[in-house]
Length: 325
Image 1 (tube, rainbow, N blue to C red):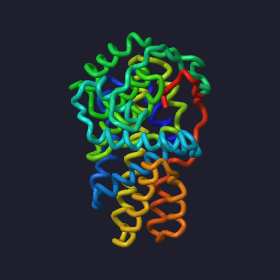
Image 2: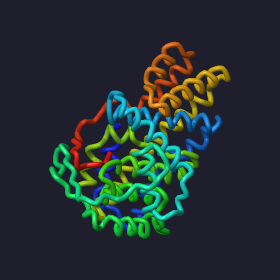
Image 3: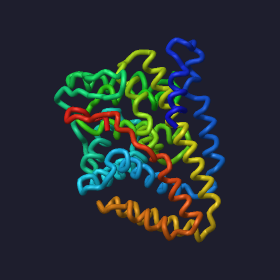
Image 4: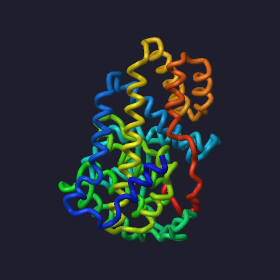
């Protein structure tokens, strides 16, 4: 996967495309992949949605923590709450309101509004070639830059839906409006926007896949705002989202081939696991035990859920002052 994503990014050098070519940079492969999803969806949206909810939580658990302490179980519960909230949030609201509402959901696990940070923050990366210390936006500039991001990117009539999603993600990480949780909020918003592109009723979560290819993303992100950075970031995000959409298409195919008894068994496993997340209990044991005694088709599908999470990157070192998680 890393090689595919690296090629998607660096095969497109800054300035190698004209203005007309730039419009297609993020769309060709993406829309081919989304058509596969539409063709494969012969099962109920509800089962696919719950399956993808479980994959999203599993991805965060494996790549953020690697284990489940009590406070981390609560964070998984809050992330699931935020994921469910973003499905029904009104995206025509001002961007600052959407951000504050989603941030409250992933930090408190309930509806509310967070405040933007009132201190300056910095990030440290150990990736080879990346800057050692990147100063983020001054806290006084956060509200203004959020408004500019909404006006020139989120509400743009020139950018494609994919480009809007990718660049909103990029700007949230750069602006860094909160002390912590910026990455999760950015992924929820971008995932909601891309879910619409793929004709899905739920956000596309890239936590698992992005954590296997952190290096290229941080190189681009730390280069700062520039046309070349935007082009490379769009290409990077195209690789991540196309890979995730193709994974969802494979899940659709697997679900469509299940017999009714298999589907009933799978639904029971998913419901039990998501209930465990909501209750702040460990869900890994539930999935593992079910996999061990499940019917063959269900066992194979449970393995597929975790497939994109194999491998873990440790290249990014988080400090107390950094919150792109």
